[in-house]
Each structure stands twice: as structure tokens, then as C-alpha cells.
Image: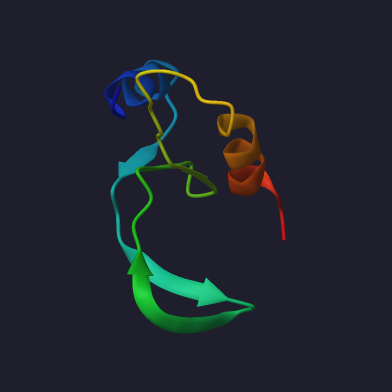
Length: 71
């Protein structure tokens, strides 16, 4: 799966999106070395990283929590 499906659904819902737009990497309100390029940015506020696997593995719930854990 790539971002085509979710992007199509967002377009049908009239949500503005940007795909694979690079932006400076920030940490605690300062720019650090490197660039960040999320798969999709929705309404200039929500970043989506599309992840896909062929089959589930027991470690997947822990990885999901790592991706979604606010720091």
C-alpha cells in the first residue's frame, strides 16, 4: 500500500494535502541538521507516515506505540 488510497479519500473529502514535501527537521523549536519528508501532510497540521507489512509480527504493537507516543 502506498499513500495513493488515503490521498484519494482525503481529496474526495475536500481536505488539502501535500505529498512528500521536505521541511527542516526541528527539535525543541530549533532547526537541526537534516530534512524531514513525511508521506502526506493534511491541512498543514497533520503528518502521515504510511507503513505497510505483508504479515503481522508480534513486535508490531510495540512499534506502533513508539510511532504514536508523544514525547
